[in-house]
Amino acid sequence: MSHPTHLVALYRLPAYTFPGPGERTDDLPDPDSFAWRITSDVYDADEEWTAAFARFCDAVDTTRVKALIVGAWKEAYDTDPSDVVEALLAARDRFPALRALFLGDMESEECEISWINQTDVTPLLEGFPALEEFGVRGGSGLRLTAVSHRELRRLVVESGGLPAEVVRGTGGSDLAALEHLDLWLGTSEYGGDSEAADLEPLLSGARLPRLRHLALRNSEMQDAVAAAVASAPVVARLEVLDLSMGVLTDEGAAALLGGQPLTHLKKLDLHHHYLTEPMQDRIRQTLETAGVEVDLDRDDADEDADDDGTVWRWVAVGE
Image (cartoon, rainbow, N blue to C red; front, side):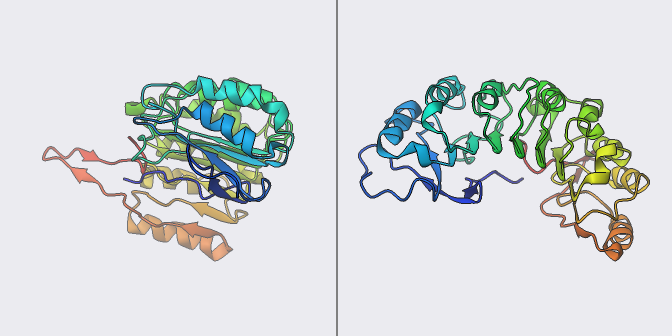
């Protein structure tokens, strides 16, 4: 099983971690040259995240900051980031250049992705109307209601189990500028209770006129997702289709190939899959010969079988 790692970049800027308490802050880099990662500790924190953020605002010319990465907060396995959201919103007038925000940048050693407690992130999108990129990690307690945002170009939600409410909220949002959408749907074991039907508003493309990269991945219902995508109107305008990291079998791949043509794509990403060699060959012959880049790396997608014939398969990122 894979595990998310710290962001190395955001908004095409390399990530830079703001010094911790007691460390020097008199030789910091230019505010607009990095994506600033502000973090505390999940366990036995010497400083609350909000205190670290206050130090950051005092030490850095925030009017020039383009990207912020929210790292760990104290007891993220038991505490949601409501105070983090409140602190960000209270300081929004100090960040006129902010264009990218990521909430919950934690590795498994800090907090497993499905242990991260999240909150309603709708106020962040409403409070920062100039954001072009927004991302969040962790699905437990995550909420997102339908929102209208004119500037957002990239939306990423990473989870081991994405609540249906978030899927529906995304589908109900008017995101006229969105080009890149990445949803990790996850498993029911970790709160992923959406169904393929919940994706219909997204797959219609009616509220996503500029979408070019669609990722619906890390799903235990990847076959059903592939079948829904096969006839989805939004696919005709895509350059990249990503159905990776999930439990995709020959059934889903056959439905995908039996639907509308995919030869206009620049890339089809199916890595971490459960496809047989004949099906992989069929995909290559259909798409690679038409110039489509296809990722069929099996990755660590191993399956187990019980004595009674039950086959167990897993998504790439669960707990």
